[in-house]
Image (cartoon, rainbow, N blue to C red; front, side, top):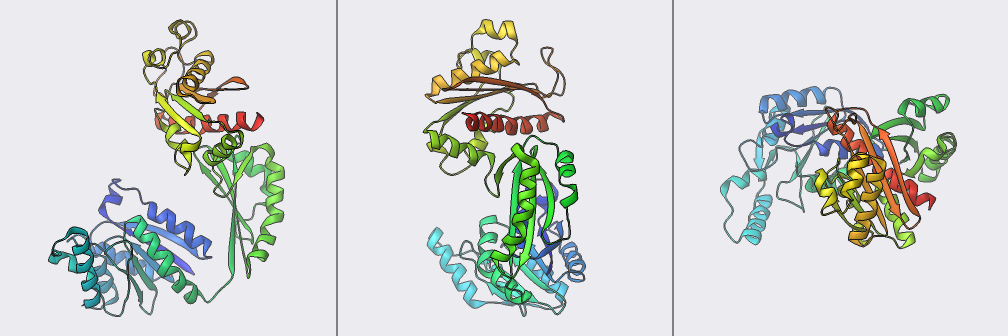
Length: 413
């Protein structure tokens, strides 16, 4: 089915909130075999929501709306759906009872009257009870398209989608086949090079289809196949996957959800090692990514942000004379940073990163220059790279490069 996602909330337009719901829904809908044809965002304006709904209903089978189901005056999704379809709002007594009981259980007081707005719904819609929050979702057959309304809070939206919407979409689609998605993760090759190596097998609309996805300097090759069963879909993907892996060779480092962080965790755990991080240019980005996966405390000892030059001397312990002689952005200093942070935190491996993010040069070093050090039981390695882009891009790509340098060293050890 063709599906559009409509996100409601002025905060999305102002950049105050990132629309992660749309990305999550796009991935899940693709897994279910549906084609997402458009993502939109509109503010808390009933006329704009109605106009967006009319547009989407005219060209899609299903419109999924996120946000605007709360109890406040700017939560207008219910009213907008009613206006777009031409029906009045009804009131559900059972939902009102549940709202009051949940409020009293949580706050020990009588529910404010305004919260009962969440018990209103467009006439003819099915209410989808929300076990993780108060605002119910909606499923409404309009004769043109199905309108699905979900809360904007991610955990509530995700729970309702998987628990209530997915089964209904499957029945609506009438197809019980399976979709297999395989993501092949690569590092170290430009997107253009990956594309050239796969040019003769690159099929956008075939079965399987192929797409290249660039993110944080990593290139992912996504293969998608549809068939009646999982086994048949995998049989379509596997021969193409084998070609991709053979042609990209050592650039392939993981599959599907096997991120570089998770790969590092496994490599460390296999050796019984831990890691500590000393960061200058990235100011904590590397440590943040290393500690994102569950179980990080088993292999990550900690990190030090030593942004100013003097903090690399005290508390980190890099000799002042080394910095004066070699420069703060240099391989000897990066190596010393890695060794010192490992020693101070009792880790088996130290990872360091220093550099110049820009916009201009610093200490005679051009912006985009990044130096990474890895110190461990098998010795210390240093690498200097040049990264393109503005200050933020250099920092983000630098963090990714540091993680991959650590992964590369661990794989060789």
